[in-house]
Image (tube, rainbow, N blue to C red; front, side):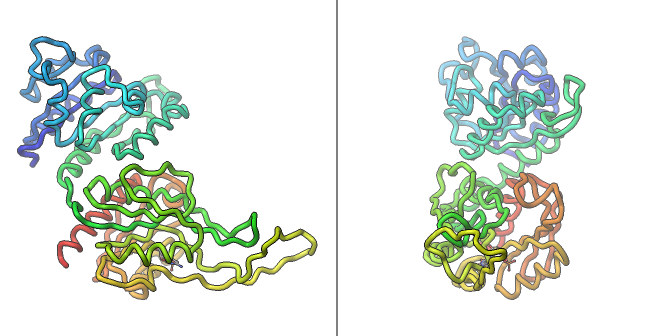
Length: 396
Ligand code: C5P
């Protein structure tokens, strides 16, 4: 139940706007106070009366409407919100939010709010895939905006593609989750590692791996949004630097080891999402190795096992990327490295794991309990992992 919670529901000009009536209805049924803001374009698709009837609350459509209870204090909704949900969100409103434009009541409210913002996009596939839209979405994500969808499916144009509004249930569930979590990590220090380390061979070459860093960054951002002080120790990635997170950039496994060893002194939890090289060249050539011989042998040595070596009074979470015997191998690692949790990931799946935005994982705790999660966006996987970290911290 969402008693005493205020949800500001923003509706923009998409054909999916009619679905927002059901979202307003379900949130009202869950006892939330639903304050609807519609853009002018949204009113072309559904009438404000529908939302007023469902929510029992006034609906704002015009910043300068004299009868509006919010007209005097244009930021009062921003302050009242426990969460802002924009569903459906057009490419246009996403672009405006990414640029910090505040030329209507909805954008004004988002710019002024300190509440979490959930965005469920709905648009034409070409608009969605346009690099400008993708850039805007990445920019908002880096600032902690939570995206739900879009989904793949039939679009208003009749074509199939990405851009379809997600199932209503997903928007309502995410809203419930965000409200429930609130700031359950406030005052906690969380250390997250991300990305794939690189082990130099010579001045231009290295041994690397396919990790994109997305899971670690999603964890860092999710922990930040739940109130934690986050230290992100990242190997090189192509991801934007998350706002509100302390970032230490490293390159090699040894550098990551040193950064982690220092950071855990104050940590409540260490989450090692980084793909750390297990071996490094024994010798680093100071000059570029020339292709003079038919074969070349590199002698490798073990790197430190960061997770296995660090210890202290903090929750230890590891990842296990496996291509066979997923659960069995993950459990072995959990015991060997004395972890509280291990997140097992089948890297042979194409829709999950390296480089992609989604993951299907099994979270195993030290008592052997295994929780198989469905295919979820990495940000949602991150929150599910943090739910378990919160539980473990409460038990300590
Ligand atoms: O043993 P394996 O490399 O599969 O274990 C994976 C887990 O251990 C990950 O959480 C990874 O970040 C961590 N790890 C580590 N130091 C290493 C290798 C892996 O901390 N040298």
